[in-house]
Image (tube, rainbow over all chains, first blue to last red):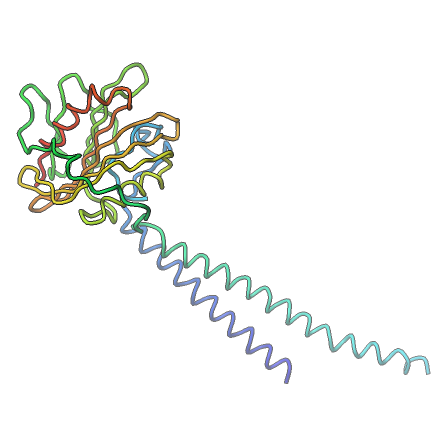
Length: 61
Length: 220
């Protein structure tokens, strides 16, 4: 009886974890497609904005 | 006799082991659930979330210099790759390496930037309505420090366009200080951000050039 209860609890938590984790991955993927991010901190194109120069007009994070 | 006396403890141990295993398993799954929830939260907050923070104080008088006009004669003009906007800049200034899809012109002295102009297509959560708070918060998000929002205004008239502007000052990650004018300008079909900046010690010298460039920005 005790074993069966634990199995249900474990199964429930596992299902919840998979659901929430899956949603997180899906959300992250969704943003990736819409994010026109311009690399900062000397990332990618090494422009002045990414090297301590004034901030450019890029509104993405 | 001996087996009888040892049977009790042995049986009790055999009963508690599965329970401990189950508890450990439940704890591990609970941790996995917490991790998954964190991941979901990160996924939901990335990308185009709107940075928040105190708005630059409204002061339309600080932008009275905006007079929609054509670029000054002798200046150069460069279109965005999209063709949605054009930046005008003085002949002595030079186009600089910039992010894809943007235009940047700078006036340099040695390795330092004395004057800076940039146009970038609207690409995030910035709008004309939230600009007064968006721009300072965004600059902080990108690593600028000692940021002081100086002034903001909305409903400003540009060439066949309308816009919102912010004036602020900040220090970059390399401790260079700049005063900036940043405007988001909406034309008939496109919205573009134009930024001009110069060190505080050179602001009086170069702000007229920066203001003229912003006043002459053309947005489709």
